[in-house]
Length: 445
Image (cartoon, rainbow, N blue to C red):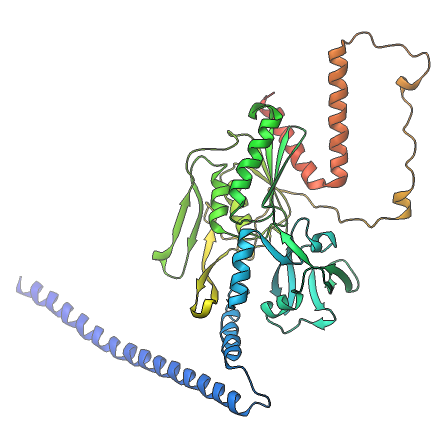
């Protein structure tokens, strides 16, 4: 027994000695690191004073400090940045859904400005700007080497003024110029319409208006259709949606889920992680769903698409999304400025991060590029081919009732409308066809 006690004590003493031996170097390392940090801060102060006193022109000290802060933040990742008081105010206005500009969401890649997505119905969208375009010059001035905020500042200007941007696009041999007239951008967060028996919810952004717009838009379409039983399904169109508020992405996902996790966020400290779960209640009553995405679907859009895909609540159709799987927190600073800092990564319910990978569609469907109008396209179409119904003296079909004939004509009109939609928006038409197939397989009327 005495031997056992001595062994235990010996082990304890050895542990104490070992701990003491390790603590010494760790303490020295921490002291050295703090010393290096203070030296670097002193170096920053020295450089700041030399610029103030010796630069060839007089400098604005506040602008110098702001530039240093912005450089520090932008060195972290493309989504962290300093917001001047003016930029912070503009961001608050944009979140509410109305602002001035071109109507494009941009990021930075390889020193150039890259278009995440054009916003529906804006000057940039109408000018033909596409997701994935690179902007290399603004009014002839190169944006290479500029911070993202500086490049965006070049694109800002009075409403009604003209701007010429130089675009490099995949598949185009040479860069080309695009002239755009700046305008006030009024975002309609959700546009709802019905195609045949399918409700199409086009979500363009995630701001304070998104969930209220989605609820009211869906309710209006269901009422116009004669009730939810007259609707065969819902297409949630998230194409070219650059994202927005995390809270709105969670609410939109929850609108179509009865239970389960929607998204989780994980920061540097595991204790700061959060999980967001759905509560009972599906606005569609469980109707089949298709989600449309493309390379311009980013951030909040990817949260929604990933959640509905993981829960097998919707079939995701289109092309791979943008791949922004990080969360930014906007922190107010003294002087009315703010700091946008990446504080976490988000994960879909299955635990996957889409950072730099994007959400992969269940069915990949490319959207044909817009074709320029040509004389051939404008030429009169060939006359419709003659059928039996056009022949003089034909026999009448007296085996059908008037109601049956009317139903045949209505079905034919729907088919012709679907064919026209394929020419206008191939991906959407494909999504609606999928819903028709799901309804047919389920045996619903």
